[in-house]
Image (cartoon, rainbow, N blue to C red; front, side, top):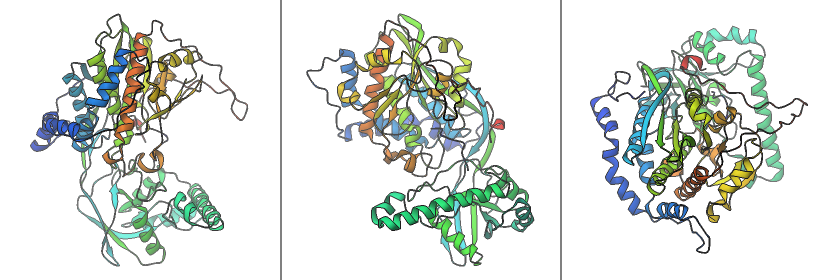
Length: 551
């Protein structure tokens, strides 16, 4: 899920684009066959809670079959194992991303669904390797650290003294200090005096202490923000300045405020390693360096720079039997950041849409409209895959009845906005009536709502005037704990919640496909903002078709 700027054509897997070892190639190409038995075992070993439907509820028989399939024959855990444990994180430009494209297309084909990979651009090729970071002076300690995405590797381990940013108040003073970083590793992020969550502090501190610590933390953040502004640099230019001055490496700590969770984004250097260190170890190094202990750390980061990689969306289609030129789109981004496994961002959305397609193919053979699944690439760098699809498929966009997007974690869907379409209530309300009460009873709606300008892939459709709806999930600690963090792993998925979302999505897709009317695209009159300016409908944006356009 894309929330803000980060800090900090089918091709064979044997392509020279990705020089994999023989064993890696065999592993990736045979992943479906390799995991087939474990997937079946997983499906039979777990006793899941079922979505209960009131026997008195007058459900459409096809929707009832969706519920029965999800309750009795769900493939979610097996697919999660293959995607998250087998392939892993899916950073744009990596062999793992291509493997996920191939895996998802092959999964669709195995269910009898036409699927292919649509190229929308290229990206710098890269593959994560092992990373070891150790403090070697004044004592020895292995540190909890992660190399940032696309960071340069170390040809051999880099060992250097750690320094902090100087206490200066102007660019001139800072630039005078810059040459002193030559050969050193610079701690570039804000120091966190207390590495406990706000919730824990509030639970245990007295009210007076809580307010004191809260004020101190807020002031420290304001001071650091002002400091960066005063020295004349930002998140992009400061790493460049340190690198150009001869620094041996840069370390940050992009702590979420939740104990144990750091966010991993992309490096801003081209020659020296850039790493993220957990708040505990980062704080220790910072205090040592600030007090003159001159700690030394050793960084060994063995990533690989690979040839320019092609970017793909995985596209699957079940052709409509009555209105093949009108479309219902199931949307989720397949890519992820790679600090962990990309489980809730956006493995859960991907699994929801794949399972929905499987069920629709099995129980809805006479679909009126064409059902499309789009598993997008490079969402995390600016909705590039879905924007590319909108730009490259004008006929599909013209005929889109609705797009349903899921991309904010493992929780059950609890809100749906009309996205600024005046008549959205008429059709969303009608479609929701076909969803089991046990599923729809959790959902709050907002009509006509406001158009999504970014954040996730439904915004690409909304900007083009297409009814694209975000299926907003219950939080489950998403933004603090798993979103883009080192903790976004398989075990954070609550599969019973995802099952709920499969039933919802399948029922909505069925109802939208069967609707005798084409959706109305009339847009709301936009309000004024706090300054009295008229808010504009989001503009269609071109995708970044190359990493050269990305900073």
